[in-house]
Length: 353
Ligand code: SF4
Image 1 (cartoon, rainbow, N blue to C red):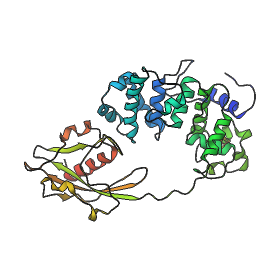
Image 2 (tube, rainbow, N blue to C red):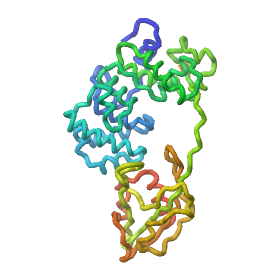
Image 3 (cartoon, rainbow, N blue to C red):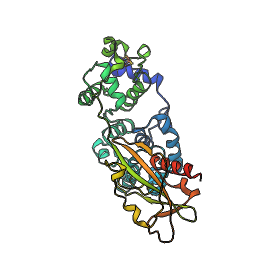
Image 4 (cartoon, protein in one colour):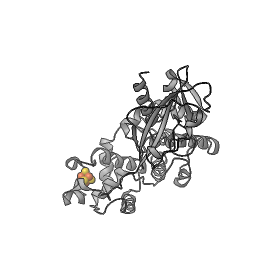
């Protein structure tokens, strides 16, 4: 479909018609978009790039071809299949949302942005993306790619996050009155392949003739960002405990909160206090010969760094714990987050097991 008049939206749509990226979740050749696929991919793409997401997406739709199948899966299976994608709250919300879609919406995603927003794991960006891409509604998803394109096209030099609302308003203003789904994907593609963060490819950009940032000479500096605050560090002691059958003690984290529902090794509280001041309630379980494994394990979450000192010990018949004793060979079947995988690797390579 070729647009007729020159407007930013038409330039972008004409470019999209020739240059759109191909993804397994995208409809091609006049097919209707699959709402389950679009939703699943959008949740996976929150904080993760398309290259990483593609094999996970294909694996999910093979295991669970429909939203009904996903809703019937066990949370543990979903968390396990999600391993490596990070931000596990997304997987828990994905599962919760699938159940709601099946139980309350008859297996059909609602088209209305407000209803979509009420579902677990769906924020303003994802709601607008589903509404525009699946249902052709007048909705404008705005993510980092879109913010960057808007800031550059208009030479917005004030920094994010202060200027966020202005960029959202600009993005809405640019949205055409037709082809809402194509346009949403077109701006995403332009931001991801042409108007890229470090070296925008202005020479091949369809918007070069109207881009004020390009004319001003330094589009790569946009959008500006207010300096980030340094992340705080938290500390914890964590315990790699075996029994005399060479099983490792693991347990499940509480459903709510960071890494909720995932498996873990027991640890102290993750505290702003240094290791030396941590309260070690787990030590009261009967093992007296804990040995510290040299070097700590470090991991960074969105809001803080975590440093863990790892201890290893062997439980005897007096050890009183509630959790799971897992065979060493079965550890890779458990839904461990990356942090726990690092701790396991650190412990097992030290113990040579
Ligand atoms: Fe981005 Fe350059 Fe295109 Fe402007 S001309 S939108 S800066 S790629």
